[in-house]
Length: 134
Image 1 (tube, rainbow, N blue to C red):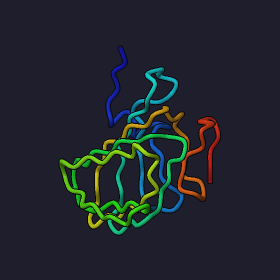
Image 2 (cartoon, rainbow, N blue to C red):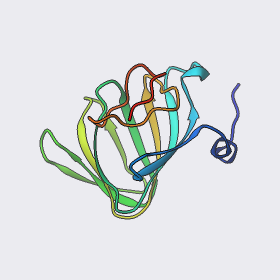
Image 3 (cartoon, rainbow, N blue to C red):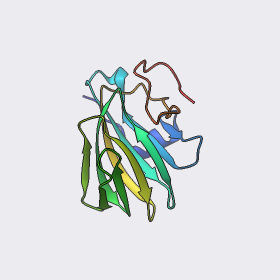
């Protein structure tokens, strides 16, 4: 059994702050936990507006608090996000995430992340989870 708290994880190397200043993420469950997926609590800062395209991972995102929107670039649709909303990037959807207020999100990635990843120039995490992108 694995038991850890968000407070403990925030004090160690599981807390990652994005170089662009849009988000921070505490990675509670990672590849080395051998569950086949990773689980993160991510804060998207108010005013953040950034493009992502997880070409190598599937992601589910549940909004715990705050508000914003996600826009799918394939069709231009804008979907509001507020507490209680989940969005699932089941087609490696290229998207833009906008935070109207600070948002707390619970995120699940498959395959699991190693923990140090940051978005590359395409807005993706590298599949080689040991590599750190810039």
